[in-house]
Every structure is written in structure tokens, then in C-alpha cells.
Image (cartoon, rainbow, N blue to C red; front, side, top):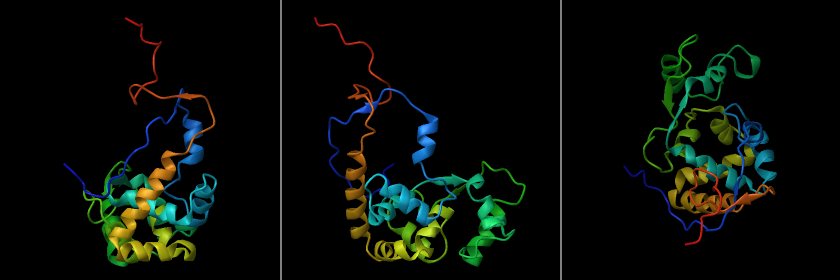
Length: 196
């Protein structure tokens, strides 16, 4: 099944790591609990702009996330013992039913109202207080990111253009560590192939 969305040419010749590190990954992968200020600072470390941050967050236009990622937001936002006030009340009731206190944390919820279609519905949901993750909804509650959320909610073409620009910039990122151009992207290359 195709989900729609933009396409772009992927540059060839990118070097992939020779190893995998959960610790390194944890340092650069944003938490679903992150706020916009943290996300802006994280993206800036990789020379990605606020516009890139918001556009690339639009990848949450498709998919699901686990209740584990939002229970703090529903029941103890910022240590208050209360839900996040940014959640629209009807959506909050839906989330309470999906992710009850003490419920199974592996239950999943849609990241936006059209979870199988790559579109700008994600941004429309954020403007209406219907972001699933804190790291998503904070993009609308923060003054530095809000204008891009509004722009992308109103203009899908602009979102797609910004998303492509952000993906190309991310594709150019390199770790500075030794790497290789893989023959199979899923595994490191083995010994060189013998010449016939």
C-alpha cells in the first residue's frame, strides 16, 4: 500500500557506520517527552533549522506510537499529577480510554487522524490540540515553532517541499567516524568479493 507524500532523489555514496550503538542512538533520537526547546537545540547541533525540525516531525503523519510514550502526559504532565492542558478535551477522553492508568503500555494509538496517509493532517491535528506525543504537540505550543505548524497545516505543498529539503539535509549528515558504502544497506560489507 502506498501512503502518498513527496518523493526526491536520494544521493548515492553515503557512508554507513561499521557498528551500531544504542548509547549513541539515545543521544540523538528525541524522546516522545521532549519539548520544543530541547528539540530545537538538538536539531541545531546537526545544522538543521527550526523549519527542518517542524517539517521532519511531519513524518509522524503516518504510523502509531505506544501508550508508554504518553502516559506521563495523560496523568502527570510536568509532575503536576494532571493531564497536559494542551490536549483538546474530547481527544484527551479518547486517550484516557485507549491508555487507562495502569493499562497495557504496548497498546498503540494513531499519530494523527490519517495514520496510513502521508499528508498535512498531522499539523492540522496539532493546531487543534490533538497531537499524540508531547514532542509533537509542543511544536504548536512553542512560539518559535508554531508559525511553521500553522503554515504546514494550511498548505500541504509547502510542507512537502520543506520535508524534502529536510530529508536531503539529513541524508548529508555524517558521523565523522569510519564508514563504508554498503552493498546491502541492512548489513556491513563482508570481505571483498574475489575477482573472477
